[in-house]
Image (cartoon, rainbow, N blue to C red; front, side):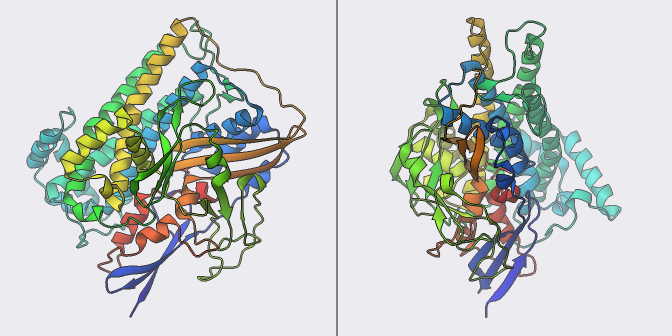
Length: 545
Ligand code: NFC
């Protein structure tokens, strides 16, 4: 007999996600992903000045605000064929990379670790043994017995006081929890430390962006960050030195704490490299623009079908016509008028709520497709595309990690594979942040102090798309400009791709497909469902906007 479980809301994500699963014989046989909230910012954007769009579009989300600013401004620059000076590209790149570092630290420790780490078991750990495990996998100076003992004492006080606070209501003692007490203590201690380091990365974005969340320093054609290095400039040597210090500290945290923790946890949960594959068609766009026209990038994009790297087709730039023409969004099972799939420049957002109909409309999330196919976006897509393209930065960390974990590329099509790919992305981003700071200083040193190409909006009709590879995957903002105003605005967001409901042909979206076959040991504590859903790092505010 099958049993139906409804998880609503899924917590430790952003936004309102409901997931329903049918469980048969200890395994999920069918799943539905339902976004439960709509706000209508695409509609609010119509009729406004295209130069202001990026500021509104940041309100799609409370987490990945920066990425919407970048995609939005790129959509205007693409429509009007505007070049972006190198200094502005480097400043944008540093903000993008630091935003990703912050986002991935938060995902690993604060949003997903507690699916794998049993907080209560950490009470039984020997702090001395924890310190020796930690020191055997990393030379990070914070890994001392004293530190681990202090965390354990703090945890004891919580438990004895009957108040687990942020750790309340977890599935502690669940049979699917496999870490020994010492590794649980290690992870809890780093969970708390990670709060400090994610803040440092957020601070780096704020120094450049003027504010974070919701950066303030973009203009169509560049940035509003004066870079002439005199005392009146927004960016002077003192701020550059402080940025370097912050970004070096977060790099060390990512590479000496997050990464070894990920490898340690991954090696205790090898079976999770076999669950949760779902949709293994991947899409990623190239990112980290290194020229003024968005044609040269540090990380690669491309398409992979059925998890087979032999099918890899590169996407080399943000003007790729096959990419631009191939994207559609459908509403057959989403709470909008109509049933057709439309290209985003012709896209419509007309809400029509029907309640949850499992064979009808059941989500506010639309169904993006590429040439009619469901695609998984996110860190595995970017890592696999860059690997397939032979990118040396990515190849080096992937090969080293695969050797440590005893895995190959096919293990990336899994729940644990998504966590590993995200950690590798953070590893690469932490280095790239410092690379772009050096490039910025060099470029200014050569006498280039340009930071924006002033742009007027002309009166004709223009269409543009701004692509960006965000922490959760490929993001695109699509704008139609007419008579100096926004005529249409559609965003096709990473979590829209991954959280999508079935399309008009009945193809499930990546969350839904990845849950099928997932084990569920105890129906009243569906921890394993959370593991797979959290591995995508859902952001439903973004997905529906
Ligand atoms: Ni919100 Fe975003 C979602 C990201 O998918 N990354 O582009 C948007 O949020 O975190």
